Image (cartoon, rainbow, N blue to C red; front, side, top):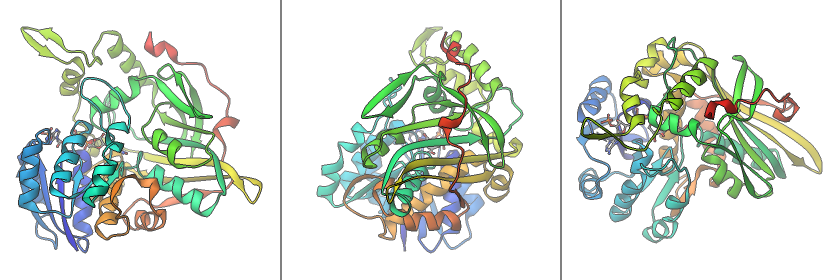
Length: 412
Ligand code: NDP
């Protein structure tokens, strides 16, 4: 069918590459390009010999000219941006210059402020329309599958969705007192920021980890979960008509939070540069360097993830609730692709999103979030490629749970 240029060779890219190779009917050819070419070559060495032709390249994705040169050389049908959110705009610029489709799994973030918002990327809409190319934003799990779940719920079960709660549970245990499951810098920026949710057209801000609930997740059990801001809240608040409230909760263990609090209190999570022995360093980047590489957690992580959305709304004038979620087993993922479930649950939808664009199912000029397309083919592919989903029409709602003690001491 076609050719994809994959930028990045980290945890998520590694899974996506495995999945592209499994889906060789669509991905006849891939080029893996990243800052450190040896990581691309390692992936190629592991997966070469199948039907998908694999090439590798070195690229600095902060440099638009380098990207343009690479795209002109590879001539892909789509660029899959699986590097970091800091590279989103340079890669989009290069796609515009070469009239190439684009996809990513996380919204743009400037390196010097932890600011998650779509405005920068949505600004490209007209230019992508004019160039006749598609940009698919946020095709991971959350954002990504959570948006597809929302579009699916609206299409098949509701006349109007009033409330969405996204519940992201990681019941995995890697045995370390403190480690992050994906890029530590991105992860810590996300959890140490203020919480925020959207209600009646307004954003309501909370302290980090201020709102806590205990939820009994299927196949995982009871876990503490905390309200966080997460980027799909912004696009879903805009794209799901009639929505009254949308919130996002993520589970964290006590050990993780205690360590994070201590690191925060001593200034290690700061993104303000400091001077150390005549050199400017960013404490959070230094912390990343001393923490275990997320890729090394795979062999030692046991347990499951359970991520999904609970919807409440109206169908034929009646109240209706619906919960759709995926359960993913860390060890099963590791057996299949050599990565734990966090990278797996992101890498699989990244491959599917790219395939949707390449096969023309999700191909329209402009810049779109996943929930703006027909969810049905994507939902089918989730079942096919390792992320089957489960439906519950009588779920326990978050609003039915008792509110737990506030955790706002985390920020003191
Ligand atoms: P990793 O840190 O494991 O990998 C990032 C990769 O990008 C590395 O190979 C890195 O190269 C490469 N890279 C970084 N900067 C550049 C650059 N300037 N030029 C070229 N390559 C570069 O991250 P993950 O794989 O965990 O995450 C990838 C993306 O997925 C992130 O944007 C993350 O936010 C997103 N994500 C989305 C989720 C979702 O559900 N939507 C969930 C989890 C992650 P090098 O090896 O040299 O460092």
